[in-house]
Image 1 (cartoon, rainbow, N blue to C red):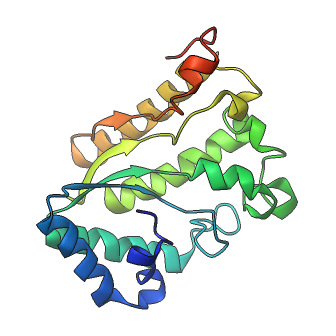
Image 2 (cartoon, rainbow, N blue to C red; image 1 turned 60 degrees about the vertical axis):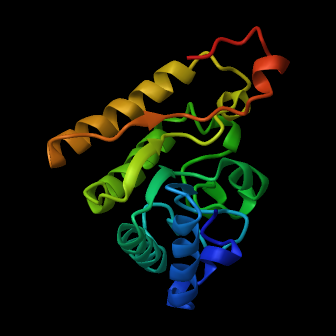
Image 3 (cartoon, helix red, strand yellow; image 1 turned 135 degrees about the vertical axis):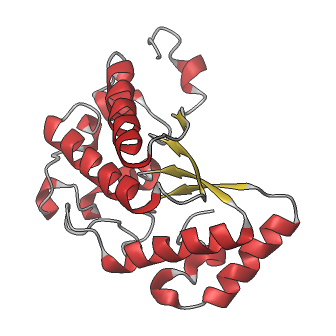
Length: 202
């Protein structure tokens, strides 16, 4: 699911909370235990988690407060990833991290290598850890959605360092706040393993 798809769209500004709860209950009754969700879904322009960069949108924070509460109630868990990298790339001209919109990044091909962007990513992760890592509904982190060489100027050489940096940051922060940390993973666009076998992967 994505937070802007029909089943969860009622969370935004609490338009249809009963409908969302019915959907979550249906998932639970049909054997679903974990939802993989992106913190924002950039297919549409009103589901950015920050706008402008560094300002966490109150309506989206409320959406996630409610979703964590409903998942706790239904006994569902969340595998959370901080960015929707597909639509982020496709709709870059609208994204708050775009330098033309007041952000720090000139082009999404430098998302994994830009120092200022790395700080912004960590600031987002810190906000989420402090607000929701204490919830029993959080199962694990997908630290990056479909990591791809094009997000690092066509190279996979820095994947390991990028992943380690975010992983260590989240693990240390969670441990300092809660005395434990959640499992972590990173997803990969699978065909890259076949298309670019020469590229090193972590």
